[in-house]
Length: 621
Image (cartoon, rainbow, N blue to C red; front, side, top):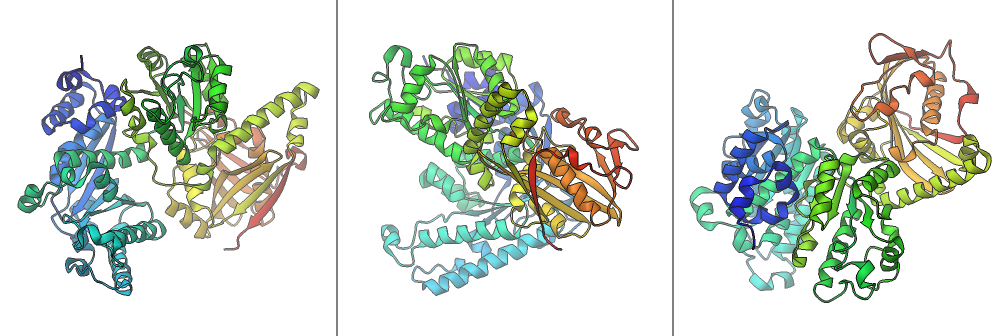
């Protein structure tokens, strides 16, 4: 017998609501959302505050109950300010209500008519050159407005454009037209997204059309509310819009997910491989096997976003490998998994082992399993891990991860797309290290055998997004965990008072990508402060941090800088670097966690350099 949704929701904890969102979120009513918000506020008060400002040209405050609900489910105390109705440029100034609110994010809810007066005079027969002129004008106009708001705030700026209420003027013929409304709107959105990324720091274009396509026009627009109250959304659309907006908020303030750890039986395929055999499991073009094929395709999509896939299955490894390697409908072959634990050990022990192998914290794991028993054990033994139990109905499995906010991304770097490949290289290195050290017992021999080459770039503008990402995501090898945006990194690169240094590391197994960053602030002609020094956990154990630090100290010494100060700011996750400066020639400075080094009396000993070939590329400012 199915659960009564009202009874189910009335008793669930915040964690259960987050992990089982696909079971209930689409059918939630407004009274239920209000009641749940009230109960969760009383029983599980939120730990984090987030301040949202909304600039709008149509009604926005009717979103509040939905926003408050999805925020409280994520443990966020949401404070929302609605600017006066209209695109009011007075709100861009210091002293306005918006800036008094001190928002973490500013949401612009605009319509096509708002972004350019030309859109208020629809003409399905516009020539292409007229369209492009209109687009260029519209983008310039909106960017000018957003730049005014950016001047006085570091808040994330999110732009939305409401899809047209009415269908295309040419109806079903629209796609055949050389001036298709749907096609030019797609082109316009792309221009906005590109312009925002290139010109407005910490900004994002939120594509409402994607949401419209998933919900459907008849379920998206409430025409009665639109014409009477200038509020376009049905409860279903308002609920989904709010959920996605809260996803954007959590990306900024919640721990990043990095690993999706997957069960195999009744998760990647239907049935039990050890009992049903490779020909008996459900995996293929017919129901229910087609649902598992689509789920695997979706998991591959998440990998393409930069998430790592891992296997955590109670099984005989040979049975699972037979499916991964030989089943004709298996999408996720063995090489798609960065690591696996296929054995009969308790799964919480295997997750701990995976965490150690990948050098990633448990709070970056999402565990997916069909078994209620296994899920409950992980929740009990490893509360840091987010646990998703797959639905009992196969038709619901392909979309069961769609509501997980930590699987959304707002940027994508080259390193993200290569992450599984990079972890595969690291697995080869670890095996090579075991073999080499076992042979002669010398770690230095292993390091020399890697034939490492470090390429250091100083004040390069080429990879700003990746450098900002390193400050935002790196936790373990990070001496201060100061987080910086792309615009801040670019400002440092262009400033004569700062030096931004990063490195890539190459060896016999491949290139690890951009894996290290140091930020130096000039105090005077002879002194520098190390603002931050961080490195990806993927290359820990190869002495790259020593080579990088010593190379930069020598670089500064050649231009007359000999005095260095540094700080270690402890967090729950960076104890790995508590002794970093003291073991690299620095002595205690003034205050807790403060260090200093004088190269005029304590120069870098060349013999301390690990066996890494170093090349420095300096960009003259």
